[in-house]
Image (cartoon, rainbow, N blue to C red):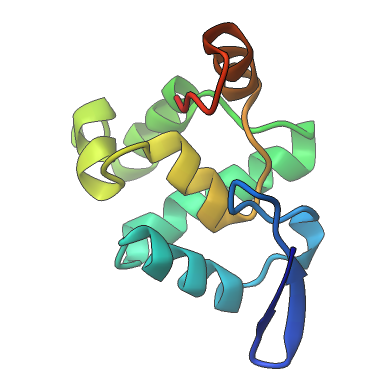
Length: 122
């Protein structure tokens, strides 16, 4: 489906993900975050930035464990664990992060959906 936002058209799939990560910008990120119930702050943007950099370099979304390791390293504290991630992005942190970052589903998410026969999210 197509979605218009401030004069730009974005192609969105049935799961709410951008079909082309290259069309991502902060406008669509803010819109998706608002729709997901996430108030974007600096640390949210830092995670989104890392995800997009990683995706650009490796053409895949990094595992959550990798994201947490990088966030701990960059911030020099132990706040960045799965519990903290779930507080920032309740009810499906991986999926919300990817949607806001304009990235496709993770390989693990696709595998979970196939195994569980539906829209299982990691």
